[in-house]
Length: 101
Image 1 (cartoon, rainbow, N blue to C red):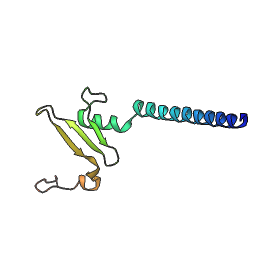
Image 2 (image 1 turned 135 degrees about the vertical axis):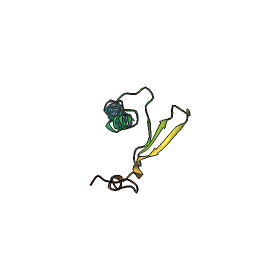
Image 3 (image 1 turned 180 degrees about the vertical axis):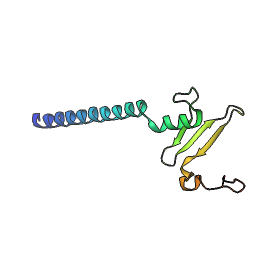
């Protein structure tokens, strides 16, 4: 009976140690994201011109880069899909715009 209690005590200690390590890893990752989120800083600067605006844009989906920006005029939000923006077509010549020769 004592052998069985000793085994369950060992299992409990291992589980408790695993939970502590898991929580420590999660907390360090959350702290790192909150402290140095370069994507959020870039989006803030792109849409507001400031690194730390009061009414910051919200990143809804990081993978497809969907950003929601509050519109001060209409008090609604505007959704931007930055993942759809292609740099190779950003600098193409538009009709009606003439280069200086």
